[in-house]
Length: 133
Image (cartoon, rainbow, N blue to C red; front, side):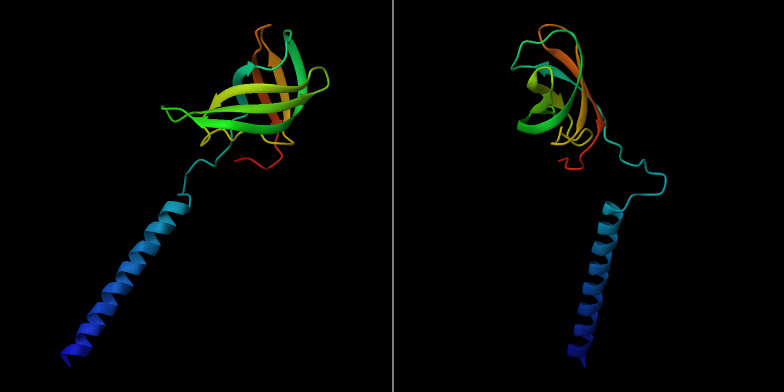
């Protein structure tokens, strides 16, 4: 009789633990009421590093995002390729918080505002391809 009670108590403890773990997992992954829906930022500041440019605005399409390296403060340095009709493919070096701002991705519709001849630029994502990571 004691052996049967031990198994029943052990089973009940395991069931309670599984229920607690399942509840905690549910709470972690499901947005809470009133939570803000995730909306990726669409503006990146950085520098064109591969060609000489002049101040102005050009449109382009995302070609690649590579060489992403984390920094000590939680940000990420990346090189994004932006295909333009005026300059060909621009290599845009930028720093961003990947948790808030997904990387530039192939197919993204982008506007490049070139601030100065040194290549300092602001890139605005106006349309996403859906392949962000």
